[in-house]
Length: 369
Ligand code: SF4
Ligand code: SF4
Image (cartoon, rainbow, N blue to C red; front, top):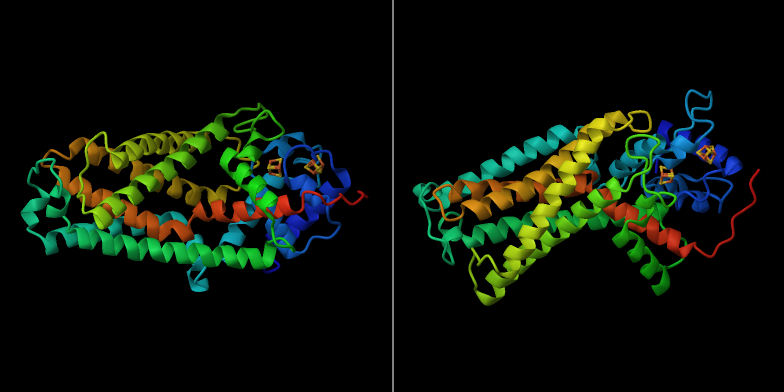
């Protein structure tokens, strides 16, 4: 990790916090901070990704603005996290995509939809896009051939997986634990990820919009997180059905892919729209406003993926099915392409940071100043 202004400011704040230690029961960051007196770039990268941005320490801090020290750990770590996303990105030349993320995501989405529409028009009868199709196995492939769906899906998602894995490796080398995590550490980290424990703040939830505690952000994040994975499970199941068993989409309303996709889509929609609404009313002081565009772009893309999937389900027996299918597939392809260069990478780095915290759980804190 390069030395930057954000890194220097994070180091200054951690040194003050390490002397103060008032917030040590708030989250995993402060106990992790107390294990060291000096903070390397890798340590700060780790601590920034361990922070879940609950904002509790900002409202508790006697040195927060307007105090001359201006301690604002949530904002400082948010800025540093954004730098780590670009720093560890793979391939490195794509790191600048993080800078203008909102614009890039919109462009990629528009291109993704246009590509699928062109595929549909070029590979089959263009009229199939506008004709009503009966809801029978194979009717989706009358609009876009199965091989085209599979090829674009495998290429884009495969690239995303490789880019995310390389990013995780870069993070791990710089900010990962010094010793190999054992099974207990893996179990603890997995539990922390699945329960989003750190979004509980000190036990009462986050300071979403103000000094008042609330569990809203944690529940909305849960809805988004599990909604995303149910949708992903629906896509994987449909892929296995089509590839291994030759069972062609669309599937019955009571089938596993449709049930997983419907519940997942609704959860994803509730989570993303709710989190977006919270951004409209939250206190701007503990937030890095220059990163708002990237946050909103990702939320909108996820919401669009859920919404277009539900619309396709509702319209699959009508003449609008062709366009609905092309738009949905275009959004999904865009999501796959944008994944490694969006805020979505925070899931990978935060998991790695929680794993490092779990490996350090038995270390004793060093004395404060
Ligand atoms: S955020 Fe403020 S109150 Fe909390 S440990 Fe740091 S300096 Fe102390
Ligand atoms: S914002 Fe919340 S999670 Fe982040 S350091 Fe402060 S108390 Fe910890």
